[in-house]
Image (cartoon, rainbow, N blue to C red):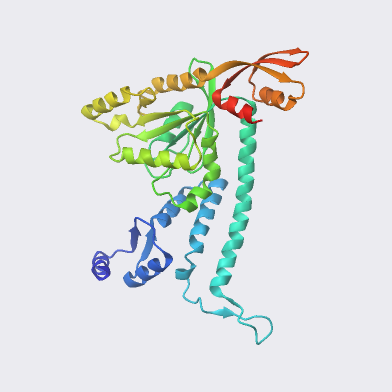
Length: 359
């Protein structure tokens, strides 16, 4: 089979071979040697695309971290002089350090440096989140498979100019904008996130965790699906699996947006419309033409407003921390002081209630 493929590669003058799956470093070296071409596996290709798309400092750091973690295991094929050793002290010198050890150490040092820089990014994000929490706008996070149309929907709703193109991973850096839902006087923060992909390499999941933390902090998750894609169902299952691995529970409400309906013919649209009609939490939209967006905005509003409850609390004087937290989040509607402490009226979501109970 190798020989057969080799003949085909030569006949077609192919210079790059892509393999849809993981390839071990030894396999990669052997195949490249046998075929005389550059070879990339799934992870390698995704990293190449990511490196091309990263725009912000954070995006570049995350891609670099993932790429180095990946390369560390592949030093075996990158060098032909691995048996060469550097001498120890003095002229005679001990066995010293082999080239591969030196290279590996250099990569490890770089990884440590990158991780430190990313930790700062995580802290900065945490500070931004804390600042946003003080101004209690609900966060609506757009998630979905890569190229599902999240950025186009984001731009249409916010008037922003986030790069939106018909290609994989056009968005690597999360963008957040405050929007006022038209005529309702209700403001929310909309967050555009990196697209998911099936069999996402573990190196990438780890590197992009900081970015995806925005999703775990959301009050409402909007799962955007490219409903015109032939594998839309499989893509939706992959997104659900990745959300679960991030620790997103059923406590965070989710709605599904079936995007790109402008690409469907009348018959397909009717079939999907019947399916969507069976669920309260499924909406059909076209981010390009704007069709269905009013219904989408109304739905988001109903979720955000409809999910707040009024509650009465009695706090003791020593519960100063809890009281401060309620004020910090802007949840207090009224407060009276009595001899036992504070009688408070608060308006909050189930999620905020759960957070309060852990204090």
